[in-house]
Length: 432
Image 1 (cartoon, helix red, strand yellow):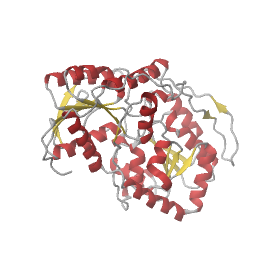
Image 2 (cartoon, helix red, strand yellow):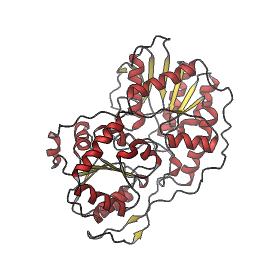
Image 3 (tube, helix red, strand yellow):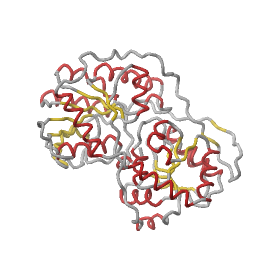
Image 4 (tube, one colour):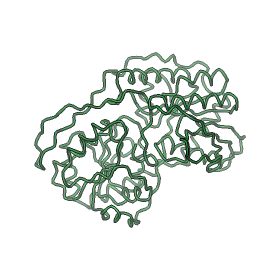
């Protein structure tokens, strides 16, 4: 990103765990965008949620870091830290603020009262997640409306999210996606540490939540005649029952690695898998999917608009365990087609460039500083075009021996996490 010649801005990035990025997509975006804005000559302040005993550097890649405490309770961690960050901002003013996560909307009026222009990155449709109880779903629907009403601009990372805010609130958004890391092929030396060989396994990388459909993937693989093992990377706090049920669906061909915190190993898993299976469905443009296509992984994705927007014709799609079983069987029968899919995915990744993303944020901040936005925001009242029914948790299927596409008896899924937050960790956004 070239140095800025139109004037230096002071920009605050608020509402995430901060940098260095070790968790989800928000943190990766803050690091990749913030470093480029700093390189362009802007003063970038990142608010960091740093636990006791962790390093507290004053700067990182040209960004100035402000470390503040938080309430170490899942339902309050994000909101309490953002509240302290906003209080600090009121005493240490900036020209523009980017607030990540609509859950932080209750603090937006303080920024507006201080005449600090603010854009909110609204993230995905959190209220659709089955893990939230009724209070959590209601909270996320309320803060969506508050973000519309109290932000000077909204940021969406996918067309589907932009469409949702247009249809539900008649609210315009700035569509700025994430970048896709370019992961070179060739290196595979770390695979031996986990007993794998290049192109000798199928891969899933996901937080264990029902909307990520890990259970559908594992069950579909179990039904298939696949000979390559399925490697499952990821886990989730607060979801022990779902994790237990997913593990019970596997057979002896499925290898659960848990969380992989070695970034080099994780990149080699993406770059050397036979196929990557992606089940995420409600979070907008997903960093794990971008990492997979940046590594040239042939991708089989859950069939929703967010995933089709990224993959287009380079991907294969599934909805049911039967779909997974059939697609894996086809993939193993035609390795040359899989290689073509991987090459096409890498072409798709070129559309997601962090330099372009940073330019989008810079242009938005310039408009915020110039107050080039409508003085009157949408009311935040819903137009009622998007159904607001209770999210239905996908069924978890009882395990059974490997067999052709037979239909097992479903058992109810019981996953309850009663608090709105945006917390579970992931390595550099890969397991989110």
